Image 1: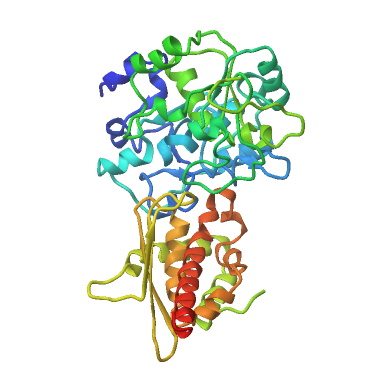
Image 2: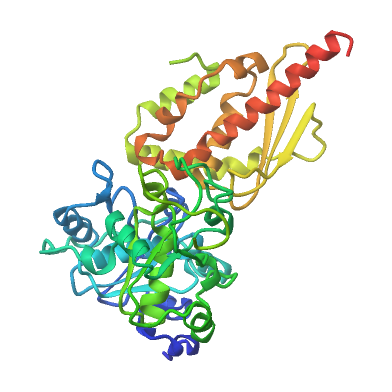
Length: 293
Length: 155
């Protein structure tokens, strides 16, 4: 089957699949379809046939330390879903693939590199009247080896690193909505407050909402449009040391995926502590208003 | 732990005894039933409150009718298509569980029953809208009680 012509413009076209391809390859060997959503019960209401559910919080996070699960736990999540290091994991989900991007990024943290995203995610699959089922698949247990390391240094930024970044005036991207950036809102539009004491942004961060990279049907914008946004207008160079953040790291995972896989930027990190850490942290500097500061 | 209307108590006790997976299955069954909670053609209400709030992803309409003789409240709730599944489930649960309770009973209810129904694993910051429908129901009851008080005072 021919590749979606839109994908050929991306730096890593192999990182995306479209609905036509996926529907014809639901039972292909060596792949596992993974749904990750914000709506915690959405998978149960119906999912792509053969897809398993990986919960961004229950499966990937350790909330006792606000970190990701231990490598042993990650290996168990994969093993119970029949995933090996050779399995190509195809992620999709709600909210224009926020959480599937986040899950993909978390898989990359543990060194799993065979990852793809369904362009348009769950919403487009549904809009195209493709099949859903409530039948939960069962796969033979795999034996995923415990990852020897986590790739935090490569693709994840922590508070201190982000602070150093702002002090050195290195590229920071705030992907939240404009009013969250200016400090007018301390919550996302249409969402409850997530416990942030201050509004504003990390000094020096440029406002580039995640949504600017997505079409209305939740697909990613074509490569030339993305290059205009990030390379031309924002002036980011492919080798720049870039940190993206939002409130808790899911929207910035979307932007991380765009920069890393679709535009081929080589040094992009996601600050998953994001505004819920930065906005509350004692002595962390903030800027307010429309200017980076 | 507060006292709940009898129908709701029955639902809470039922969910309390379920495992996590069973809770999920039953929440999906309730979510599937949410469209049936919408107003039916020809129904009349004492109060209608339809709006899109900042903290919810879509429009929610709450419709209240109170039986003048018994003060029993009856609710209909209309949900926009983008509300989360837990919100849909809670809508069906509350329409059934609060049916027949008085506005005063509803206003006096605490919301500590929600985790007993949903379970700790599914309650997260992003899922706080499970409390939203109850808030909207209480809001419409409060308006109804204020209006009744005003009428009694000759307003």
